[in-house]
Every structure is written in C-alpha cells, then in structure tokens.
Length: 69
Image (cartoon, rainbow, N blue to C red; front, side, top):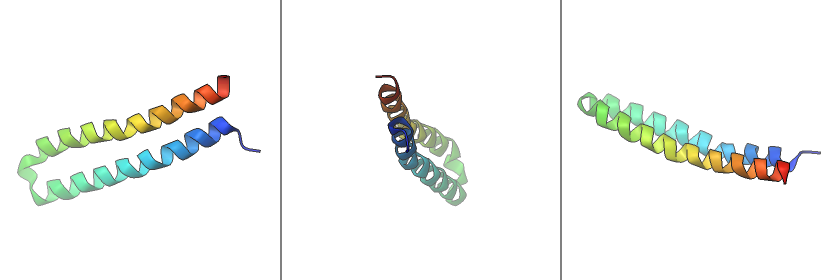
C-alpha cells in the first residue's frame, strides 16, 4: 500500500521535472540559433526553472502536511 505523502510528492514532481527539461532544451536551441544573446536567455531560463521548481516545492509541502497531520 502506497503512502499518500509519497504519492503526492511523486505525482507533484513529474510535471516540474518535464517542464525543467523542456525549458533547458528550448534554451539550448535558442542559444544555438543566436549565441549573442546567450546571457539574456540564460537569465530567463533560470527564472523559468525557479517558477517550475516552485510547483515541486508546493507538492513537497502538501506531502509533509499529509505525513505529519
């Protein structure tokens, strides 16, 4: 039997994992097409990854609430 907190963090981390992969791939493609603006692309990529990672942190919070409450 799977624990509800393990299920919450497992399902909640799938989306951000896929999103971070897609963001990284798009950034590499954009830098390959126009290397001159690599700094701007990298900053935007890091911000987008932080927003995607926030969803995983919300899933972690929900998992901890399920675990300890």
